[in-house]
Length: 91
Length: 419
Image (tube, rainbow over all chains, first blue to last red):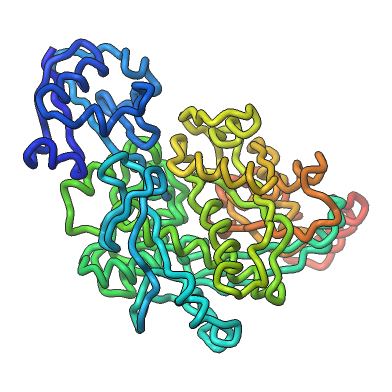
């Protein structure tokens, strides 16, 4: 599956400034691993010591928070967009 | 003017950052917080200096992250602290106070945070003020941007209360209704911030400064109590930011010598049952805050994925506070109770706070020997829809314009007193 990953400003230093990266993977976890393989440094930034997403890292698949889905095990379909977004508050 | 900011600091990994338009640690995505030189503040600030200042949040400017002589100001803050003896008697409490933030310029506590945010945003060179909002923040950003001569772009969920939409649009900015929940709007704005770096999203890229405005609630409460801290405060939880910063405010008063020592204030949180991820974690005794899809009349607290939820939990637990989640019916009843006992008309979020106060008083989590302050953060005219059909939302009688009709109606009212 080819998936487009949207990269927030804070992580674009890892992608040479690119805001979108296309990578392969069958699940959210695989896609993020593939992202790290293509642009080293992502895993360290996104995951804590236990391999879970850091608590202020939000990941959305087709605009849905993956925590409402199956988390890193959530399957992805060809052509979907995965967004990495820092948690923000307010209202 | 000087300010006493030493920089920004990541709340998660403690990495330092410069005091620029930064809100997220670029390493771990933790939120950044303003760090101050408290020794220098202590050498400058005094009760007299504050009391000689304007009757707004800007009397506390030594403890705010701005150095602007002319802040973006509509007169936010220094709202009434009302002794609530009649409500206290109903609840079996002793000394109870209501911090009445309905009296702010756009009718909610958001004027505190926005005044600070746009003052700093203008200083940082931003020309456009933007935000994601459940309504109150939108009202305040649009109004303060108008005051500052800035353009505003405000994104809101499409199903907001009519008054909140009108109170935003009237100021002439751009209002975009999004077909989704607040969490959807918030996520969109978080992404937009990367694409529109010249816009100051007050709750995203200038949030670090914005959040500091909530500390003024603690400063004012202490000053209005004669420079004493309360024993217990009850604060509504949307994102958890306000509760966290109120606690920070009380702590700072001790750090800079405005109170003799850092006060021990119990901080309790209030949520609506239809959106209570923080209350659920508190009551279950876990650190895991599971995001939820909100369904409550308390739309200004309808944040299903509260970014400061962990910090709010930490404050409540460490301070010996409590937390509750109340039903929409309890919220409506509490709005009526506060109105008829104290003459204050709260929006639904205020109803959540007062309903939680009722619960915690009944359970003994708030004690009669405590000096208690409940924060009522927004005006009831903004959320009148929530009361449609409820008791007290329509005339007692409708009559023909004759004395006979009046007498008949009032006689029947006197025979059946409603309370």
